[in-house]
Length: 116
Image 1 (tube, rainbow, N blue to C red):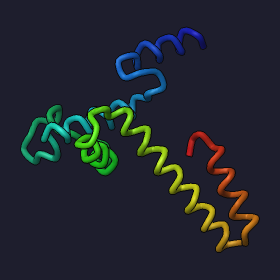
Image 2: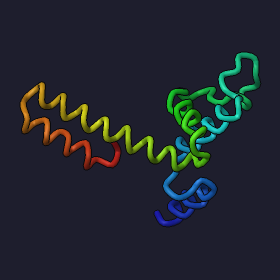
Image 3: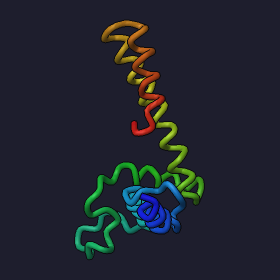
Image 4: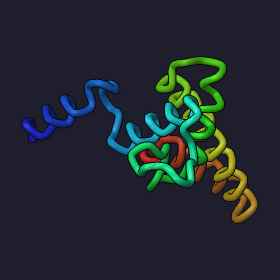
């Protein structure tokens, strides 16, 4: 297990520890969008910003990069905001479905789940 962990940390060192391969794709896609290389209909697949991944999250990152150039920092703040919105939506869903206690428990479960 340790050699696999070392390989994973070496593979993500350029982007920082804890950045998954999907995250690297989204961050590079956001970089390409911010450079003006977005959804090009007649371009090479390697030049396209996002040939295989949904473009909304990288587009949001690229739009926010006009405020700050640190894409990883922007991604962290955007993910935190989206997580807070998810917790509130689950709380409202639980509240409407089964009452206040269920909404609170459901929101706490989503807030404590790191994979959400």
